[in-house]
Image 1 (cartoon, rainbow, N blue to C red):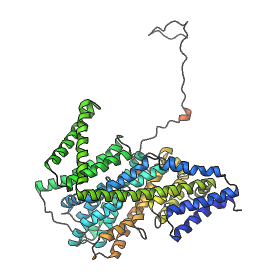
Image 2: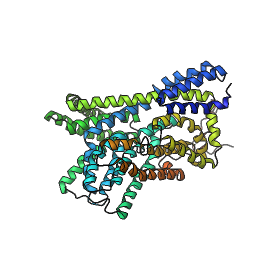
Image 3: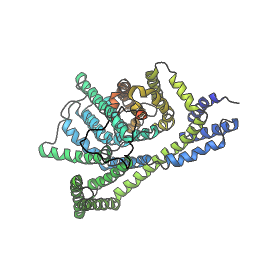
Image 4: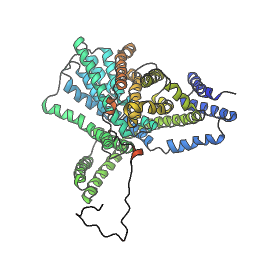
Length: 534
C-alpha cells in the first residue's frame, strides 16, 4: 500500500524515467497518468467515475477550445511569410538606413526581428530568413562572427515574447487569463529587451569598433524611400491585421490569425506571382475599397456603402487567393505550409491530451496540495518562490519543449502563484505577471544546448566557414541578457503591470444595492420643487 502523500512525487519520478528512456512526451504523460490512475483506484484513493473527467476535459477544454485555433493560423502564416520575401526586403531596407553607422547591421537585425515577431510569432522562419540574408553580408564586411551568430539567433527568439506570440496564447489559455491582457503585459518586457540588445550592440561598437564596421549605403533619395516603403508598409499592414485588430477589440486572436493568414497569402501573390493586368486591377480595387470602407465605417458602420466597399475588397482577396493556387510555386508553398501546420498542431494536441491524463490523476491524489505546500514553504516567501520557479523552468528548458513545460508545469504552479503574488500586484494582475515572467524565461530554451533550436536553425543555413563553436559561444552573452531581463521582471513587476487596466478598487462583496419601494396608489403625486416632508 503506497501512502497518498507519496503518489505525487512518484508520478514525477515516473515521468522522468520515461523521458530519460526517450519515449515521446505526449505518450509518456498519458502512460504515467493512466498507470497511477488505475493504481489509485485499486488503493481506494478515488473511484473509476473520477477518470470520466478525462474525456470530458479532452472534448471540452481541448478539441472545443477556440483560443487554441490560433496556433494553426499563426503557424500557417509564419510558413507562408518565410518564403514570400518580406523578411528580405525589410532587412535590405533597414540595412540601407542603419548600415552607414557602426553596428548598423546588428541594429537592423534586432529591429527586423522585433517587427517579424509582431507578425508571425514563429522562431524558425525568422532565424532562417535573417541568417540567409544578413549573415553573408556580415561575413563580407568582417563582422565579429560570434556577435553575428548571436544577434541573429537572439533576434529570432524575440518573437517568443513580442505579441502575438504563440507562447503568450498558450500561457493565457493555461492560466485562465485573456490573451489581450497577456499581450499588454508583454509589451513592457519586449520593448525593454529590444533596448537591452541595442545597448549591448552599442557597447561593442565602443570597446571593439573594428568588430562591427559600418556598411556603405548604395541607395539614396527616391530609390531609398521606395525601398523602405516596399519593406515597411506590407509589414505595417500585417501587424494591424494581426495585432491591431486584437488590441482594438475588433477580433479575437483566432480571428486575427485567420486575417493574418489571408493577408500573408495575398502578399505572397503580389510579391512573387506573375500578375496580369486584371490581377493588378483587383489588387488596387481591393486596397482602395478597404481604405474607403474603413473611413466610411468610422461614421456609418454597417451602412450600405460600407458593405459595398468591403464586398469589393473581399472579391479582390478571393481572386488573389485563387491566383495563389493557380501558380505552381505558390501552390507548392501552400501545401508545404499546410503540412507543417498539421504536424505542429497534431503535436500540440497530443501533448495536451497526455497532459490532461496526467493532471487529472495528479489532482486525484492531491498533487495540487502537495505542490502548494512544497512551494509555499520555501524560504524567502514570494521572492523565494519566484526565484526557485524560474531556476526550475530554466533547467527544465534544457530538456523539454515550451509546449511541454506549459501544459505540464504551469497548471500545477498557477494556483500557488495566484495565492502568493496577489498581495504584491493584485489578484487581477498576479497571473499575468507570472505568465510574462515565464515567457521571458523560456526564451532561453531556444538559445542554450542541448535543444537550442535557434542555434540548430542557424547552423543548418550558415556557410561552412562559420564554426559551430562560434555559434554556441556567440549565444552566451545574449542568454545572459535574457536572464537579466528575467531578473528585472521579478524585481520590477511594474514592467508588466504598467500597461494593464488598473483595478477599480471596489470590493464586490461590500457593494450594497438599495431598491426604494414605489409609492402606494393612495399617495398624492409628488410636487417638483417642494421641500421634502419630515
